[in-house]
Amino acid sequence: MIRKIVKIDREKCNGCGACASACQEGAIQMIDGKATVTREDYCDGLGNCLPACPTGAITIEEREAAPFDEGAVKSAMLARAAAEKVKAASAAKGLHPGVHAGCPGSMARAISHAPQGGCAGSATRELPHEKPAAAPAAERGQSALGQWPVQIKLVPVNAPYFAGADLLIAADCTAYAYASFHQDFIAGRITLIGCPKLDDADYSEKLTQIIRENDIRSVTVVRMEVPCCGGLEKAAQNALKLCGKCIPWQVVTIGLDGRITDRRP
Image (cartoon, rainbow, N blue to C red; front, side, top):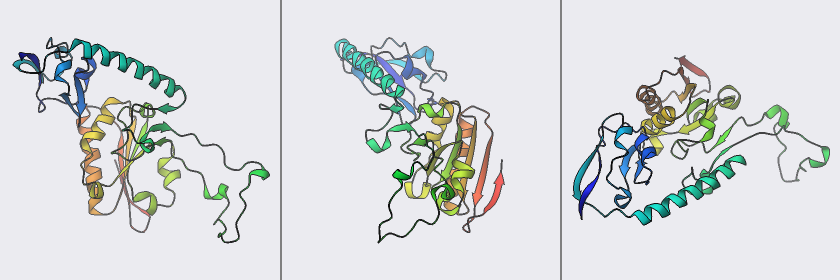
């Protein structure tokens, strides 16, 4: 049928997500960092989302579209309300379903570390065929990772642990090359890792969303002294430019011999 419906100019859309929040019917979703009408039958064509858009990317057009399905909208709203209750209950337990892509391994969660050691009765027995540990646990140190997941492609944009976070954006090889990576870089920071060469991806859009939509206090980029790591540094710099915020940042470069070869703001 011919009717009025929302039209979104993706070129003008800055990915702020304000229109998606304003659309009570749930017709608009953020896809690849851009607002998109994903359900034409959820759009009533009244344009409540228009005033929320800061760039004028939304207009109302009259064209062939699926008819507005008020019943389906009400059912979807009830389902979302129920999901929010589950999400709130899970968040109270430190779990955050609903902000991951479905795989249990990518479920967002905060990590707390209990002191290593314990009573003598809990000591691990060394099996005859196993090599002894290189050093006691206290000497080897403890993981400083404070959240999961860590891959840039998997991490949810609005995870609770981003609130007030110092962000570490690291090439995945750096943790292998630099011996004290956990102590010197991960500790006290929220960690995101990636490899633009292996992922064949530009992380700029995802990082821009994370920095724009959360209270990020600082950004530290750790890269290897190899050309392909330049893609990670460039993505972080683009995100800092596009996010519209003034945030302290630095880039640390690790050489192939495991030493820091450069550190610059």
